Length: 356
Ligand code: PMP
Image (cartoon, rainbow, N blue to C red; front, side, top):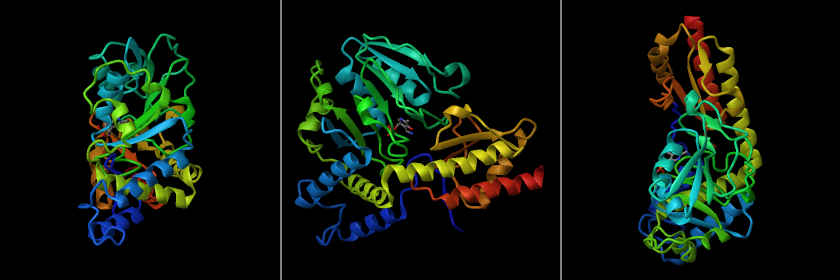
């Protein structure tokens, strides 16, 4: 039976990426060597790295005064690297959920950390708006898409201080004005690649603000100066990332994927709003295009395990909600085909016919 992969991360990648990486494992670009075994110092891998840089630049329209690095670790590594590099006096954080909180926890190790806005009062079901941003912050940290709660900033923030954004779960899914950010980072295992590589897009002038004596690997300047090759980078994950970017470019880039993502999300949110058995958890105006969270409607709560079983029998994978929210979460990342969303909607309709 066809599987519909709604996993939150690592998650579905384009079919062509599976095909190309499978081939490259056996013979990478006619080198007679596996991508798993080539040198990161080889001319062939240099080309992969250069392509990753130029494709990401082109697809996100990244201005020339930004540097891009692809390094190992996770978004969680940047949670401590960001304050280690940039928190000199005081940093501001917007608390929009578990990942934001983890970033805040690490920042506190390095200096004064102010939570300038939070949506914790309503279990992170919305994105705080209209809050004051103190002008004396070294930076303001936001999480543009909250993977667990299904909320997302739909507009880029205007800020008097540098904005640093965790875009792990919505990078390249919708247009973003990179020039409004001092730094964008994330783990690549949702919209870009298998697990193991992270991306960071850093405005050059930020590097001049680093004051701490940092371990070499923690200092962002190390990776910028060495084009992400100070140490051995995650070669295979970066190769897959490049192929994902090639795929995105081939289908029409961010404008086209944004159109597709809106179409997929509308299909599912419309069903959630229409179907008497289900109800969405995120405030409507802040609903994520990537992670769509819903629960059983009042009076139907006890049907949740049965719906999960039924959905599983129809080929749905990964729709159980995070334990902190309960219910269901359908992650609809870039590579998820519309047919998978249609299959989930059909499943919800069938279930409602049985129980309505
Ligand atoms: N930030 C966000 C928004 C995430 O969704 C995740 C992982 N799901 C992380 C950070 C942590 O990423 P990693 O596992 O790569 O450290």
